[in-house]
Length: 140
Image 1 (cartoon, rainbow, N blue to C red):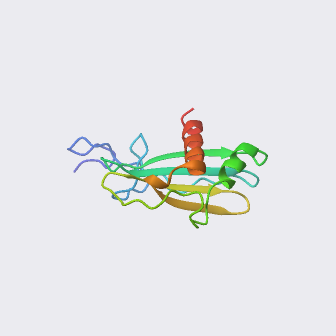
Image 2 (cartoon, rainbow, N blue to C red; image 1 turned 60 degrees about the vertical axis):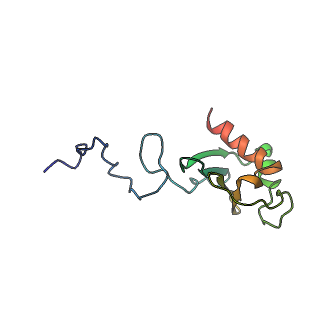
Image 3 (tube, helix red, strand yellow; image 1 turned 90 degrees about the vertical axis):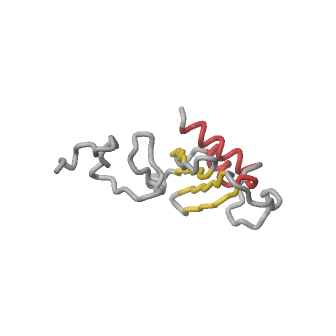
């Protein structure tokens, strides 16, 4: 019987002992299960998490940023988005299609947590600005 830390016969690395694995769960580049919730932003900060799923391969990508309480740029980007989903600032409805991306944006502040699920055609205007800023800051 192989040791639990040994790779399986198929050559797959063993899962991280501290990270539960769930079928279909997003994974990080090192192959461990990636968290789907933003990390705590601290008592006075803000965190923004962007997840993109779908596309041809159906993979999930995740970007995040943590900002200080006095960071007016991130506050303005978050506040400009239509978190209530009343349609203002979102693109007109388009039919769903195969291989399109779905986006989930979560912003956590000391006062509240807001989250929105967006279809690919809804990612424009303030949403596009926020998503692009988080992706850019996360990749630096």
